[in-house]
Image (cartoon, rainbow, N blue to C red):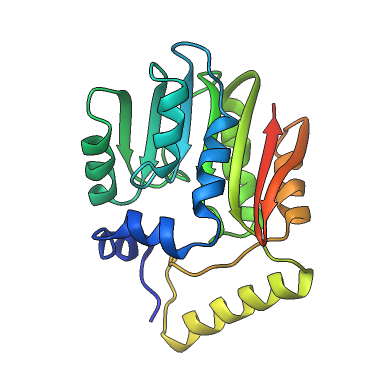
Length: 216
């Protein structure tokens, strides 16, 4: 059964970190790698989209303990756990959807998202990425680590399966439901460039998990 995104993660808070780090292939490599791509300047401001419990922040705070972070997530339980883990750090946590929360303009030195954005279409991401582009300072960057489809056919299959499940379960609303609808790296790159980013490059990959860097 499809679950609303916030309900899905609230129900899985217990043991979430252990599951992500032990059951997700190469997580012990791509979380630290992602963190190492973020700026190390003192008091730099980073926006974390779908921050969850802050797995990417553990490594980041070892290299930049004075960084300011704004984290957005749909799950209050996840945000509470992040706040507990990083007590004393300069973190502003926002409960809500990063599609709805205003980001402001020219505020952030960088943005990051890990394993959060593989549930959305290119069109949905384009609107989000346009808002993100405006929120970054000049030459700011977005570091994205996520799952991707390895072919157009795979991407289309995920979308068809999701729509079929919604139809079977009589879901007609526009809420976000937890289901993996992975784009290809090519289509993800296109969305970022169409949103205004000047360059997008692949920094690394582990199977179907890639790290992309988009520069304003």
